Amino acid sequence: DDAFRTYIRRWAYKHPTPADFFRTMEDVSGRRLDWMWRGWFNENARYDQAVDTLVTRAEGDRQQVIVAYSNRERGVMPLRVRFTLSDGSKEDFRYPAEVWSTNSAQYIRRYEFIGKSVMKLEVDPDGRLPDFNRTNNVWTAPATP
Image (tube, rainbow, N blue to C red; front, side):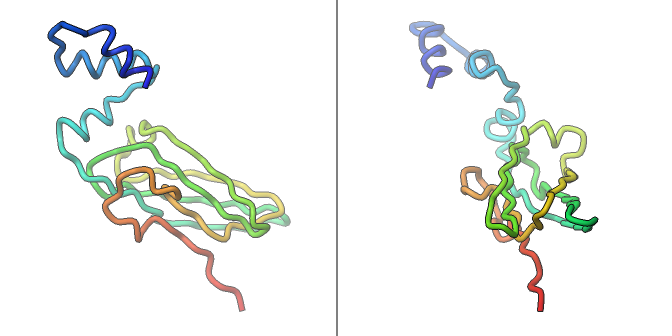
């Protein structure tokens, strides 16, 4: 809202270009938003983030987790993930869209949980971001006998 108000204040009764709008939004937010402008305005990209691979290793009361997230379409966007742990607690992590800058297809991250194990991992758990295929957004721990 602040960015839109600033844009209106700066450009009222003038002739702004799309670049003026983009620049104002970035100035006010204090963030680079080129990933969004490119996908939404220049390329008409599709978006599909997914949990590609999840590997766990237990060492005493610690569980080490390595997750490979994948970006299965051309558009990049921030990555939001939620772990549900064995004690019922949840941990949320947010990563900026820039995590896809060096490898736009895969992002690998390592986690460590002490005294808990991962029961579920969700990408975009609140459904806030556009996603072409939400069926690949969840990993669930295999049932133990």
